[in-house]
Image (cartoon, rainbow, N blue to C red; front, side, top):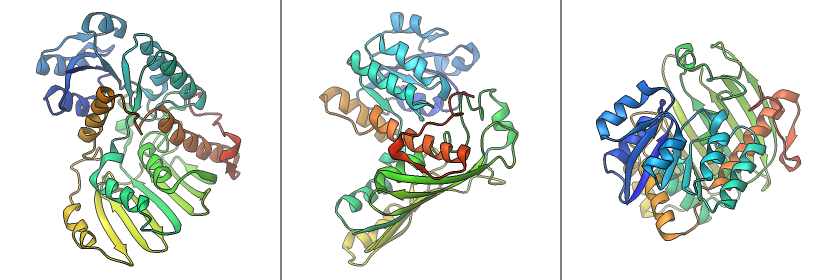
Length: 352
């Protein structure tokens, strides 16, 4: 039984604690939580009868977890992961793994030096409609890829940003691209392949924050296909969609819903029996924007640790999507088309 501890008890912690604390992950249990604000731990310590700590060094010494889940502010991920790697326990870190590529490289290097597995949270890769889409791509059913598109239309009003002073800041969070759209940008690249160049525009439309709440970007992939990114947290009055669509010479698939969890379109020139059933089987929208993928994500992490097999959600995978996010921000900052071959690095994200 692997013992998991959470560092950070903010908004996302409930999803992780519910799975680990309620025995929903075979071979895993929640053993401790940590947060500098004691009142944020009370719910978890009382519900799951586990200790809470305001210092993760004390937690590591006393609770002795096998895996640490870092759920702190994005701008603190690198600091916390690098320090925790010294305990030689496996680490899971929320998206984005870091804000700067330099920090991401330091995290990867330190975990490698300490023989620690570093997992980046990418739960939407485990959504059942996404796994079907990925299989269709691997099987070559799309033929030549033509275009990939992601659309994120979520609602984050001023009250959301006012809950924590770090939200929407360049130094600790970034805007809709780095935070809310991180999963979707990762998914687009995972499906379509490496990006050659990008041009982007952004604006802060409806909230008072440093970073953007709305952005669009045009991409050219190395394979010649084009891409489109539409991201906003200025949708009102509620969340609308988080979707990805892939268009190829032989077919078109759109996975929509709040969190890329509902098949909207599934059509290929040569239809199979499964094609006729796929929309019926995968048409359920999740109750919130987090989707259904966290359980499968944790199952994968446990299997990877137990078997020693490599994971496709490791630090390198986290860095790849972060590189694209940095390139998009670089284009926003310069007003120019940016080549990813030049290892672009934002002058604001993670810096302020």
